[in-house]
Length: 192
Length: 192
DNA sequence: TTAGAATGTTGTCAGTGTCAACATTAACCG
DNA sequence: CGGTTAATGTTGACACTGACAACATTCTAA
Image (cartoon, rainbow over all chains, first blue to last red; front, side, top):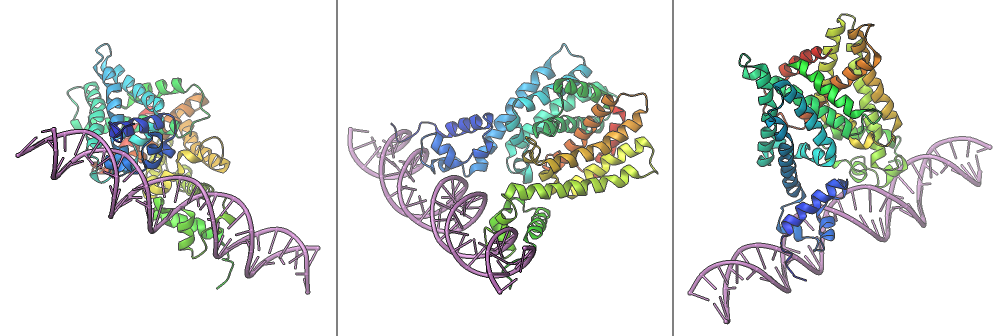
């Protein structure tokens, strides 16, 4: 047994992700993580100032995965612009539903407030740009940039709202969730 | 100085609301509340099983206020059906922005999961019905009930998404928020 | 008036985050 | 190679939280 762990920093991030996937977000904490990694309670402090800083890194990784999930759809040449817009919506919501706890964390107030966590901010913008450019393509050359921004923001809000309401259990009574999602994303095309 | 407080239960709810309004949600807890109400640390347990149960009551009051804020718009005969739909959206978002912390709590996962907190569930449905009936009126007699449900759900998601993204600080860079909100609610009319 | 229910208090335990002081190991430099 | 220093891990301590049990006081109703 070594006194030094090897790569505790990475291990902390991994275990945190694991706990998030297992819906144990409420149990995440330095003491619990240390216990699971067989290390002393304050060892994590050598790698992260506090729990929030660790979570911020996990959030960054979430947005990275998020962008990676959306990019194939955005780059897929088989879609028309409008079909692409719709498929981005579907892919967005499905990502959220496949990683609910992670998605929650990614959009937690803590990481978007007061400009701390700059990396997170940059990645969010990157994801948004994927949507915005698709909207701009749908609108054609005649439209203003502001209009593409407005519509993209509204579309973002719509898919975010759907994701949130489903994840938070507000629509537990709803059957045929997938049908509703596709249907809604099709409907959102009328916004353009 | 009386040994008994008078109405500690009501006082706990009031103080909790006060703390929410002062953006001190993170400080809410039985010990802190007891301290502020000049009562012993475990006195709150005589009135609420645990903190979550206290919060559930506060959430109920939130939905009550919410419904009260939307009703005047719904009942206002001066609006056409479509204008009413739009104004409900604006009123919805403005309620959320005027009571951000309370709104957050109202839609917290904890109170909509697994059918506990039935009162909350009933009030949510009541608020949704206000929107759904307006949508049904817009659609006219020819449309199916399912269609009004689908569109109302999507519209709900949209205004919820806008509210959440603004409250959570994701759109801090956005100027002319009010203009965007009205503009978006107008755009949502194309969904019908 | 008095027994029992309601309400409030104190003591205790387990859990958390965080800091300071100390121990061990790794890395680098002469 | 050996020794100094930085990186990393540990232990102890403190303040805070939720929660339960045992006890105290007050209110209520027979």
